Image (cartoon, rainbow, N blue to C red; front, side, top):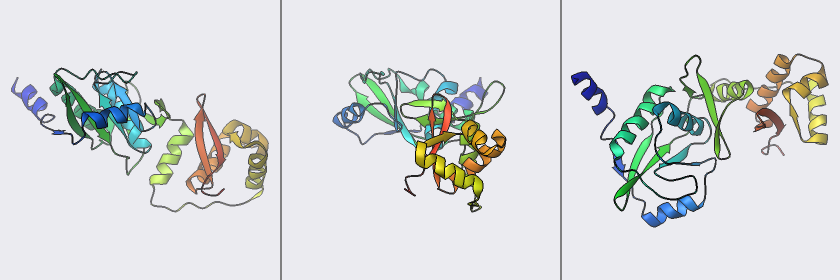
Length: 232
């Protein structure tokens, strides 16, 4: 029993009173769920909320509002201590490496809304523990989705201290001509275009993303590549 109490206490007393007003909260909610904002009625479990945290950390960071319905209705939570415990457990034990979240409390009548601030990770990717394998989640518009293998490789390369260079050879020339005409391409289509394996095609595309030449986006569960806005 004493061990259980100590386990609980290490995840308590981490909540700070928010400087936001109720008006500020309503204004924030009116912007709707997005790549930076998620609404949650409550914390269903550490495992599930960890996916949202990791997705934000692997993208650009974000905020999770606990006690807000999907439609933006503010219901609040009756007692925040259990939510606080699960949030901290999710960030420190379900996410690898752990995420240094900040939890703020805003009183709304007889209930409270928890404002969970998730910073963008410096070292990516952040993994989430699974029953069999660890998974990587990213934020795509208003959803947290499993990242593709290519996306994970990009996260790793972007977090590496080693510089990324690329060769502008025949394969790259074919790719650029295709993108100029059609706008985007998938690994499978690129592998057919240059007659190489999908593994080799993916390595070329990932390297170009890491070099800042290409951007990637997910569509219907498939990763697409297009020219980077930085270079256009």
